[in-house]
Image (tube, rainbow, N blue to C red; front, side, top):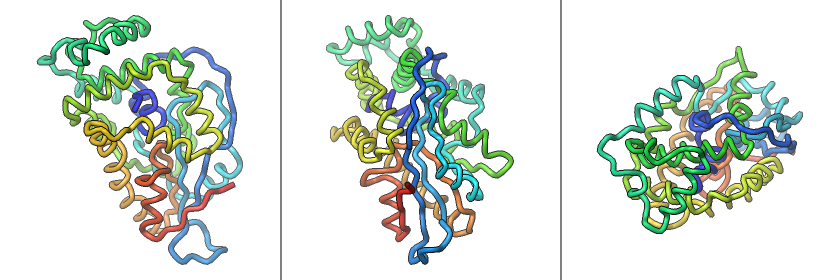
Length: 299
């Protein structure tokens, strides 16, 4: 999976904040997918038990993604559930810096296969940094940092991330987080060397990928296309399967418990998590339906 897509589609709200300031880009608009969740066996006229909304963590400035159905669901909900409720930039940067340093590492260029070293040098030059700056930075953090720098150059702004806008607008009503900043970074920090190398090399393989494809799919509400982008990036090699398990499958399964508990309490949660978590065979829709809940697209 291209780390740029990981930041914007699957996770990570805090990782998006590592990005540099971005250039101005044309502000698109659209109709992102919103899902209603109903209790097993609920009557057709029953109130929704909750809502599921796949977010994107960075967008061109001024993107128009709100629509009446989203605003209505937010107004009817009793709690906003997001990946991370506290997105304090200083805390994000401090946690990232603390977990990403390892003084025993070899030079960055030695942490990729020889056939990737020219591409690494080119990417570093394009990003305006050099390999010495990553001498003691773990490979996962180097991949994320470089991806974030390129994100800024592409016109994507973490300040326009949907998560941050929802949290800011939901106050003073309660906002609940499924994870913590440290917990999300620790997912990467626990990856073995092979998975971290795969993450870094995937950035070099796909550095020319057009981010507008994903933005367009999200704005169109094309959950199948987003799931396809996930499947395309998270392949079937051993390290890629390990990456998928850590970043997607295990997290989705751990989230179902608190989401279901909130619905069973009658909290009527508006669940807003990275869009890559929504569709697919191991996505939240499939997991909720597997437990008997009805998930319906809101048009």
